[in-house]
Length: 82
Image 1 (cartoon, one colour):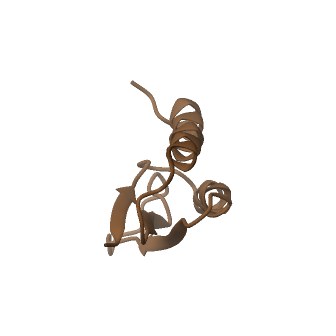
Image 2 (image 1 turned 180 degrees about the vertical axis):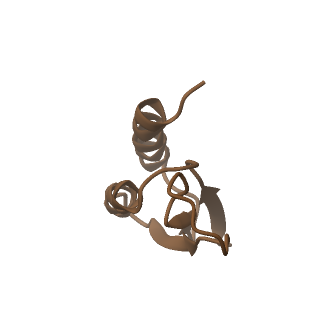
Image 3 (image 1 turned 120 degrees about the vertical axis):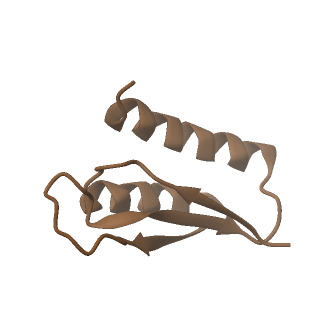
């Protein structure tokens, strides 16, 4: 059973999405692809892509799941405002 998760950080630059994808791909069994930007209008404040798809074919080990959460928490803390 394939498990798929959408990851979005509104306004995040493409370079940072690439960095996140590179880090996630280091986790065993994880695949990552980019989601195209859906807006037809250019907006400098919008990202060049819509986000990331992350998926794996079997449930990740507890260590892998923890590593994924650490990676996402790190980027969330840097690039999201609340």
